[in-house]
Image 1: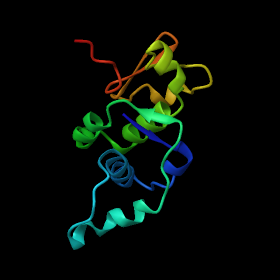
Image 2 (image 1 turned 90 degrees about the horizontal axis):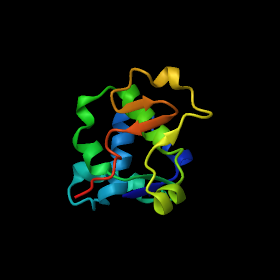
Image 3 (image 1 turned 90 degrees about the vertical axis):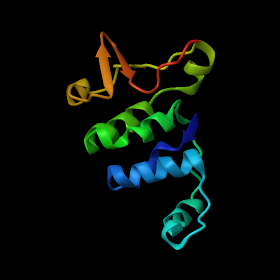
Length: 127
């Protein structure tokens, strides 16, 4: 699970840069080679916030399978959830109140059922 600041994530100009930011927040890589120097620019930013992703590793592992628009929508819609709802009640969905669901209809990462939005990689895994 990672926490991030939704407003600071808007700095990402593309899904590739968004994936780099998520990768940095998730793994906190330390640059050891010159070609990894790109991580240095993320180290100066405090990414902490109230937004969260439960399974960012699964999302990052499957990043290449989805379109840029789908990925950006997934992260920014997930960022609207409240952590207290998850912590107290285990709620990983988002209610469709105040969300324009028409633009999300073709997103393969999101499922809209009734008044809830379900996230492909956010469902709790029960053993």
